[in-house]
Image (tube, rainbow, N blue to C red; front, top):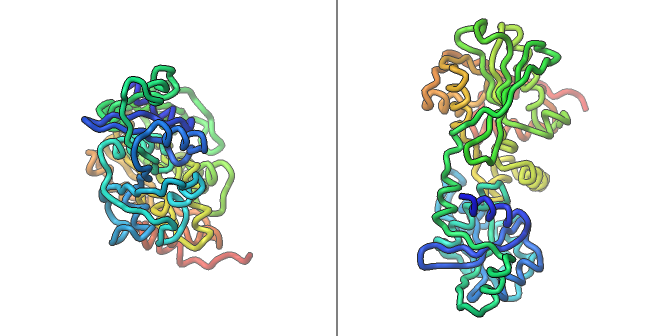
Length: 374
């Protein structure tokens, strides 16, 4: 697993990997960090056609796969022209539009490509890689690069164990009292996922012995733009602060602050999705255009934290029925659901409308309000 972690770090730095999968082998590089030098290394050290590997979500946005964005299919590998540039590759992986600008030949991914794509996705990089078959001869350029340590060699088995390592194994790392404006008796506990990739916070309000039954609960996805800067594109910050206020009013509660930025696509890709939304796509289609599903979040880590806190019956503050379902499927009894609404404005209206129409959020009452004057 150590090699897989190093491999993800290398992809994040913009360096290619030599990846073995069974009898196959090839060079892979992440599109997000692709440079002219990295592309040239792949071309000169590899032996075969250069290919772009994308998810089924991205392929549908490009018109290469039929159907809607519901559900996932196998990823696709597109053959690229020999003289394709970095800019054209990035455009193929990110630009809006159904017709690919290059004459590509799509096929299902091979094990090397699938492994490379999964590794990039595990680090919340843009879900797209370039790949080229490669082999060791003992005296070729690739052999020299491996001996010099310029390129790291990784196997698909190691990548698979790393990407499938349970994120539901949570390790408590540290805790301390953190008085808040709405809750002077709040306490923060940091949990780290077993694979080391992400960290989550449990914010408990009030004494555990004095918590109501069922325990008031909020599972909140981290939102730097809304929580910290008060972005008008969402109502996340208002929901966060209102949750703490409600906990104080009810006599205590638990807020799980999950590392799910942008529905778990990461801040960089969330900002990319914002830019695409400026062109007319809603929040779901913008995420899918980048190669992600409509919602990449897993609530397994949240359920694991609740077990660690010995919370089994909850009164959840949410508008999202998927959270209720995930808790119940995870063995947490949801006794009641409390709606949690922020303010409506011209900037967040498209986002909230898409959440209701595309994701089933229960916010009809909020959307029926009159917009404030500009």
